[in-house]
Length: 224
Image (tube, rainbow, N blue to C red; front, side, top):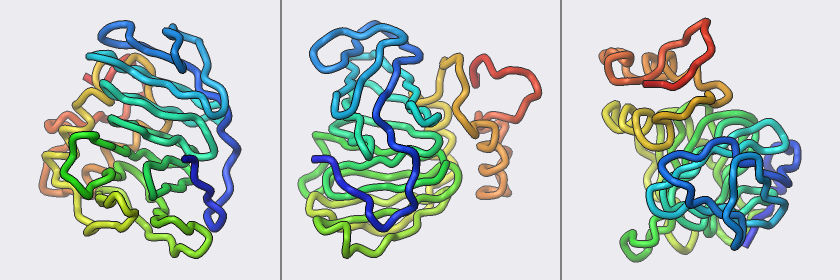
């Protein structure tokens, strides 16, 4: 079910997602057809990865995304996560079950684990910038909840938000060193902001030693 975002800032409509990179195998599909680099999913089509394979995608409005292993997303007014992990950078709204995320341009992840404890639907983590979260069935009456960089929140299957919590520095580093970032050749929009964000969030930590990327004047060919 694709969800509307009537009370949140409007952004350019996402109606196409193009495969940019494929890592750790070739098990990427658009609907039932195996996909290769430069193939595109259109509005309401599903992209999925299987096994160890990961993939990066670009959206027609300039935003970018990355699918983790065994992930499935549907292209629409929001990018709906059906399972697995999705990283989005730029102006693309994400959603899962009964919550939706609206952005103007930020870096965040949405995760939906089909084997998560009963009652749990998904987890939102904001790495850079902030997002507006809407929960519940009736989005027109919902009051947006702001989730800032360095924060995470879980959502139940009935669309109720959990406790807004800080992302520990070790977990932040694990994300930016993990499969959503590792070995990709192309950088994400605003990726060079992550080191500064990390240092402001965790001033007692050496973010470079944690593996968070440092801004560079040279084209980034990979984070680590």
